[in-house]
Length: 133
Image (cartoon, rainbow, N blue to C red; front, side, top):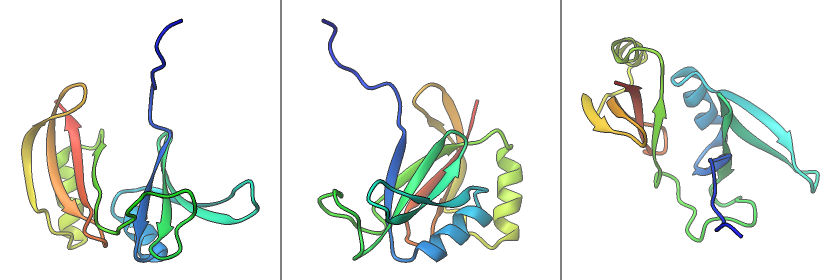
């Protein structure tokens, strides 16, 4: 028998102060799509979809079980890959008055070198937007 091993990430969960404000930011600034979905118990939840991935959203104080031991808005550090050139991202972020905290700077990704910029979402999560180089 071979050892067990995971292959990929299906989704992650962000705990946020406001699902509405988070959806607006991720849709407007990062081009994601907010989607409501129904789970097995019949309740409705919200996710941000992009590519083949999604980010499930939990509102602080109203998290779903099971959950992180310490669900906290602003505790995430996420890196998103993009085919859109970083200079186009810089222009879009500037046009939307989103502060670029750092970059463009070279970084090391999971599989290749990256050119990255860093911003913050409404909960102060650190968001890295990167081009593989």
